Amino acid sequence: MHKPKAILETRAAILVVVVTLGLGQSLRATMRTVPGGHATIQGCIDASANGDSCSVSPGTYNEAIDFLGKAIVVRSTGGPDITTIDAVGLGASVVTFANGEVTTSVLQGFTITGGVGTTSSGFKFGGGLYISGASPTINSCIITANTATGAVGGGVYSVGGSAELTDCTISNNSANSAGGMLAFGGGPTLIDCDFINNNNGGYKNDNASSTLINCTFTGNTASIGGGMSTKADVGVTSFATLTGCVFNNNTASLWGGWDEQFR
Image (tube, rainbow, N blue to C red; front, top):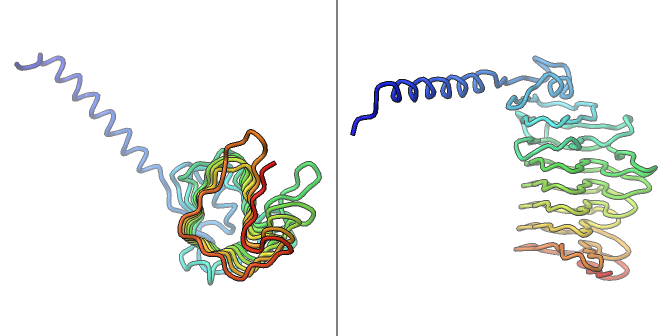
């Protein structure tokens, strides 16, 4: 049965509007460059809208950057071996995600170094990456030589949210606790990540539902749980799930590779 002409014309008009809106959104997405179009990575982020991307040329950038809640891609063109974000002397975390960033907030292909953390309640958290209540995507990054003096999460601090780290190396970071990474609450996922030579623990899972797949823990040191430690408070049912992970030559006074605490 044929539909009345008026109905067909109305549906056609709606389709045109939808397609036009879709094209408009696509056209509004901008591919930006650093340092060609913007002198700094943060300058590129500041100028970007959701859907935009910042393409960063090789070099060392003395910055501490904040994604500002934007669903954008910040990607190096040459990879982490020749593209570095170095926050030395800035007294901050190197990269901050603390404004509800989602999986389409992407950081890819950088060495992250020189961070000392974000101050909260008089302590420092997350020398390399500070992730609070956010779920960004971190790909192919080297997170190294960051500290969180007097606090936790030298390389990475993740509280709440569901951050995803893939193909990342977290090495030679230090903190009073969780030199490599602290996951506090939330449900981060780590795939093909390596924790190497971190001081005061490679990975600490504190009441978090972490998922770790094909990760390695090598040469990490701590007083308890050199490679990894887990903690679950009474009444909390959040634990770490490991698949295909390997622990090698981690050292500690107690439980060099793995420690589980249930309090």
